[in-house]
Amino acid sequence: MALGFCCVPGSRPQFMALTWTCEFLLLSWFSTGNYAYPIRIRFPNIITGKVQWLTIGYIPIIKSDSEDAAKKARVRVLKDAVFQRCLAVLMHRFVPASQYGELMTIPGHEEPVLAVLLVVLYATGQPEERRVLGFKLSGCKRPCSQCQVFKNEAACRGPKACVRDVLQHVDLQLDDAEALEENVGTASMAQIEGDSSILAIVPALAAVHGLATGPRCLHQIFGFDLLHAGWQPSFPFPACAMFVHSEWRACCFEQTCSWM
Amino acid sequence: MSDLKWRVTSIVNGVAFEFFFRDIMDVAHDAFGKVQQVQLRGQRHTAADGTILRSNSFDSDVYLLQEADVLKIHANAVHNGKRIEPFAMAVQFFSDATLLSWNGSKFLSACICVSCG
Image (tube, rainbow over all chains, first blue to last red; front, side, top):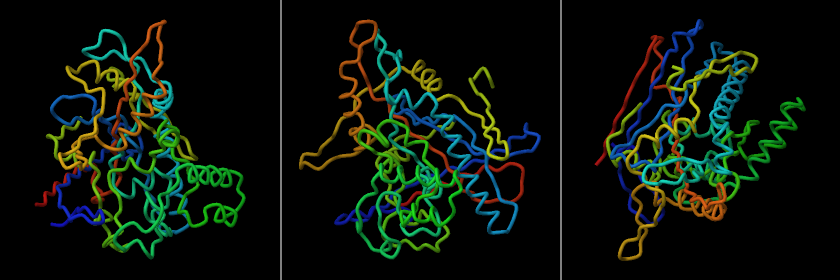
C-alpha cells in the first residue's frame, strides 16, 4: 500500500512504514461527559532503548451539533481558540525555559546543567498541523504549511514557491486577531489575511524561542509535509502524499513505541 | 491525580472547558531524574561519499540549527559564580484530533499500523 512516499526532486520514491495511533477518552468524571484527546511529549535526549511518549494533557474535543454553516464556523473558531489556550497553558514554563534555560540535575553530571528547551518535532496529521499554526484548513489558496505554493500548482511535483516567512505570518496573525477583537468587520480582516491562508489565531508555539525567534523553525517542526505531488483536495485522507521527516521516521523505526 | 502532578484548569471562551494537564517542566524533571543515560549533544553524520546521513533527532537539521543557536546564546552562562554547561533539551510533541470514527459510543480507542515494503 503506497501510503507514504518520499518525493524530493531527483530522488527515487521510497516507501516507508507509518504508525498511526489515535485515542479518544471520555472524561466521565465531568458532569457533561466531554470527549478529550491526549497531547504527548517525548524527550529524545533520554536514551532508554525505547521510544517513550508521556501524556501531558487532554485537549477537549468541541463538536458542532448544528448543520447551520454560520454556527459551524463559530464552533470552528471556538475550537481553534480553545486549542491555542490549552497549548498556552502547557507552555507557561516552557517558554521562559526555552529562552533563559532552567537548572536541571541529570545523571552522570555532578553539577547541575542549564537545560534550554527547544521543540524539534510536532508529530500530527495535516488538520491538526494547520490548527497548531493557525492556518485555514479548507477554502484556502495556499494549502502547504511550509511554502507558499498556490493551490493550482500544489498538485505539481517539486518546489514551486518560496518558503513561508515565520515573522511575516505571525505579524499578520496578530493584526488579524486584533481586528477580530475590535470587530472591524470581515472586509478588513480579509484584507489583512490576503491570500496567505491565515486565521485570526496567533500560534502559541510562536512564543517558544527558536520557533519564531533565532533560527525561526516554526514551520519546519511538523512531521508531515504535504507534497506537491498527487495531492487531490477532494481526497478525504489528507495524508495520501506526504514526506516523512527524519525525526518522525526515527520514531516509527527506531524501537518499539511505548505509550504512557 | 495530584500525586502525578496532574492539574485542571478551566478554559473559558463563552463556554467553560476543563483542561487536564501536567506542567512540561515537571514532567521533564521527573523523566530526567529517573534515567541512566542521556545524550546532550547532536552530531551531523556523513557517509564516505559526503552525503548526509539522518538517523534520529540528533542529526536532524532542526535540532542542529536550534542547538547551535542555544549554545551560542548560553555559552557564558553562570550559576553561583561558576560556569554552567548549557544543553539543548529537545522536545517532541504529538497530538491528533482526527476522528477515525464517531459512532456515538462512550469510549473509543483505535490503532492503525500500516507497513509498506
